[in-house]
Amino acid sequence: MATIGWIGLGNMGNPMTANLVKAGHEVRGFDLNPEALRTAAANGVTPATSIADAVSGAEVVFTMLPKGEHARSAYAGADGVFANAAPGTLLIDSSTIDVETAGELHQQAADQGFRFVDAPVSGGISGAAAGTLAFMIGGKEADVEAAKQFIDPMAGNMIATGGPTTGQAAKICNNMMLFIELQACAEGAVLANKLGLDAQVFWNIASVSSGNCWALRTWYPVPGVVETAAANRNFDATFATSLAHKDAGLALAGAKQVGVELPAAQLAYDQLQKLMDDGYADKDCSLVIRNIDPQAPGTENL
Image 1 (tube, rainbow, N blue to C red):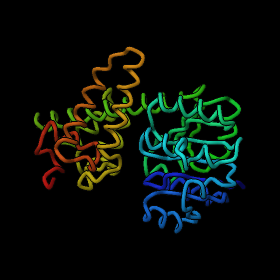
Image 2 (image 1 turned 90 degrees about the vertical axis):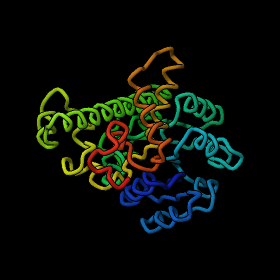
Image 3 (image 1 turned 30 degrees about the horizontal axis):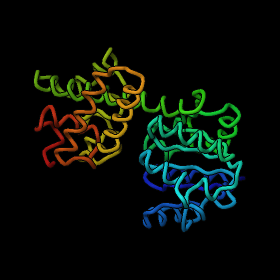
Image 4 (image 1 turned 180 degrees about the horizontal axis):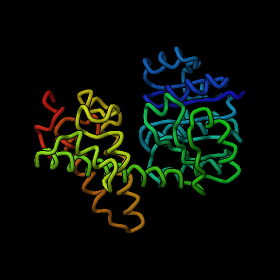
């Protein structure tokens, strides 16, 4: 079993590290949030006092951080991973960040003698807890293969995406499609309701017809239809609007880099921005239904 350094013990990092501990690894974790450290300790993670403390002597280092600037700081800062991990250490970034930053980190890691893969995940908090996340892993083939043995206790699927940054590319394209699907589900749900269709009846039809998609099956934004939907729980976040907005923005930024227009993605981004402007950044992104119908079922107390 390996000694693993882990940076970022939030809603995803804590259950992911718990699964590594269950698999027999020694995990030293660091987070700026003391409560996150306490939760990690209860799961068997050894709390670290700093990034340097977490990565000292580690064979593998994972990062799970909110944004590109956080990843840059964690790796390249004066007290970061590059300055404190042993050369040759395998570095696995499971944050969802922009492709440009991922490319910079790959290059900096190579220049300083580290192995690096970008390995963002899909599956959310429930997948992190269950150990069924899908990992999209980009990097040199040998590094990707080496990473899989450490990723395995957290994963339902491990998919090698190609060279450096392709993991991040896959993640932002996938999430972009999710937000577009979610917008379609919200619009379809509102229109069906206004035209007199029962919500469950319409869902039963759409789920076996051409409107079927993951967002419909899992996040349908009407209470009482899909058990896993945040609409059943006052739209408390399973995927916060602020993070969805960030990820949609990453897709648009990537599209700008390569000269592609994404009109549907722009619409999804703008709808998430409206939720942010209305004060719902911390609510679930499926609350986009409120933009279409402020009196939509489940939104009464918001």
